[in-house]
Image (tube, rainbow, N blue to C red; front, side, top):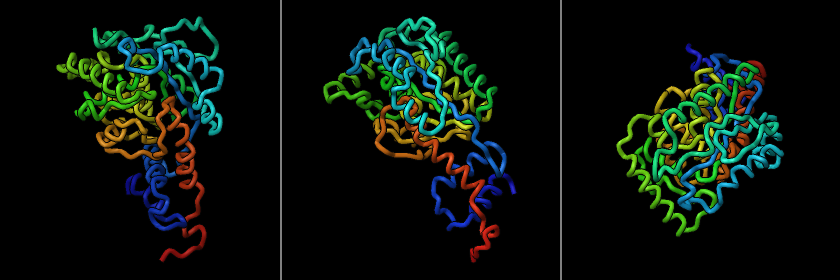
Length: 334
């Protein structure tokens, strides 16, 4: 038997009806396959939260001003955000990364200083990033993952913060999946109907501007964000390092869509943690052919869905390693 068949046999012979632990059984088999072992381990879980600003906010596509990005970064650093609470609760380390916030943090302690630029440019007028900026962001994301791998981590979650980034994510989704733009666009941080109509109108103009782009990095550079590009590079490196990737919601989903366009094999290492309430996210999951662990109406971002799903991933590994088999327990299964 190959490793997958061995894992399925091990799962099916635990003291339970076959399939009765549902998605936990799928996760256990997946992680065993990633690590090529019947006894997988989770080591030093880390959450990387990438923050950046978006020039498209000049077009009033968000109800919040861009200053909220740096204010939330400070909240992360002070331990006061939802992602801090959930990571503390579940024993996940967290690092906050300045990928491109329009603010001078002046070497503040606790922040990973990886700024490529002070936000993207207004993609309605010109590409959000130059190719050089996009590649630099991806390279910095890759380097961060290598550092965590060298410290002993084998499981990594991805979160983000950036006012305006649901617009970038919607455009990337539309371009990479072919789903109609209107089905990719949602309220983000809370737009009303008029705000939604304005946002869709702006994003249609942006989409038309870059309609001829085909190459994945060119699409990412034109319509992405610095935090999304850095996250994309980090995801690709994590897969290369054969780590387990915990994918959060809509924004992280746009990053893995770009990564998947560059390396489809990334799905082998990826666990999709929750289905966001942001309308387009289900379409992302459908396009990739994957299911999420949780569906609790979340749409906060920050990596919160990944942090909340981590105990489920732990439970999958623990039952595989610790639960008795029918033979071990002397229980009849016939």
